[in-house]
Image (cartoon, rainbow, N blue to C red; front, side, top):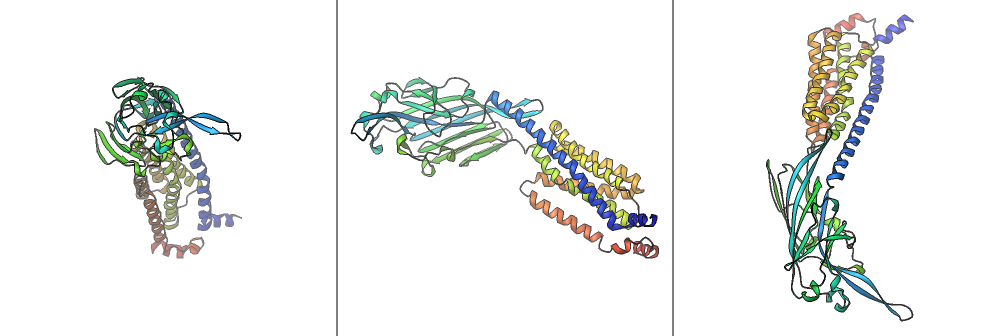
Length: 453
């Protein structure tokens, strides 16, 4: 029995099998760390939403739209006539958007969210009223109930009640409900008697919105020609939506971006009746800017944990090579402790990153984990040089992982090349090992010759 146990202890195949079991065992704490990161991200999302809910959500401004109520006449089967109220929607012939965005960071505990206060000026003109192309009799239009409508995704964040300057008159906006289907919640400015007496010429408008929001500010290009300008002191904008800026300037002290958009590529018609069945999908034409923050620590750390098995495997390979080539005898528990030291790196990483940022937390966690392994290896492997080799392997791994995480565009390519290079190195170092001979503990002379070779 003792001979069998001795052979099992000496067998490279058995040791490889045990190491494989240990690697599978270490997947459990790695999975638990992944769940911890997901839980922390959910807490962050809850804190983020709490800030947005009290300050203002991401804002989409859609407007202005001129809404004209009119009567649609129907004839039933008995020949009786009856009418039903509907609306005509008219978009501006020219729309100019000028947005000045004052940004800041708001905190909820250790969690932070970019928010802003924006002063948005909408000015332009509606073309002279002409409903002939819609097939609607002018007499059926209720000019006295006409209104200008603006959709705002989070109207609670309007800092002060806006007003509409139209052809020299001033009209205050009021809650408008959902006058235009498919648009965000709306406010409206009733034009009252204005269009009854003055609709022969263009309707020139000027609106100023003082609005709060978070993370992004977007618009719909509703004009036949839409020109937009957004400026802010935020240093890292991300331009989003279906249209990129025509010109942009980005510096450390902020950015300025300008758009010029034609209605030709827009899915919305310039005017339509509610009863026409027009396919109105304004969301497909959104453009704007996101107050971009660098890649979030939770996503980075989750990506790092993906490579956790690589850390464990390569450290185990280094230890196994010392066993195979130098002739050391290491206990599986020693492998397990080294593996746990590798795993604890990822837990330290997420714990510190929430407080000091990803870069510094990565450095501190790598130093703590590798320092622990190198100090342990010095005592277990018996020589300083062997511990230095283990430290060099860990240093290369940490450098490789950090560059892979930061190179988002080339992360998959870098990871694939790194794994290929790692496998090639292991194959090169083990190319002369006779695994069957290594498993025979009685063949001391051949083992000695092999080690000397």
